[in-house]
Length: 61
Image 1 (tube, rainbow, N blue to C red):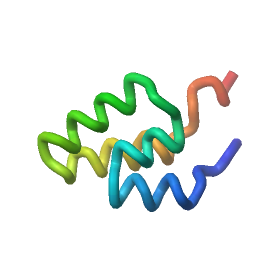
Image 2 (cartoon, helix red, strand yellow):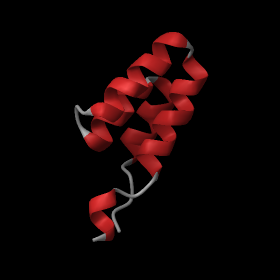
Image 3 (cartoon, rainbow, N blue to C red):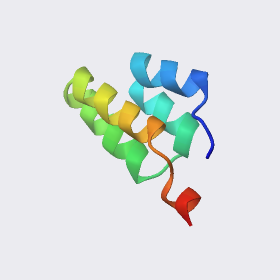
Image 4 (tube, helix red, strand yellow):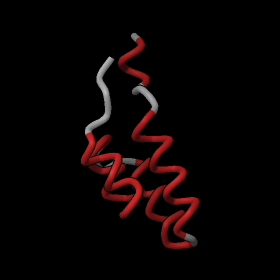
């Protein structure tokens, strides 16, 4: 199982959409994280950390 990069974790805390982009690319999770960050920063951080730190669904197959 791949570990998340340190840069993605730090970015997820400082700028949540960037952390999601570094970990997963430009997809639905990125846009959800952007919306949560725009509404309020803390939910964006929590969502970004959850996305960055959880393993991808394809890694389980």
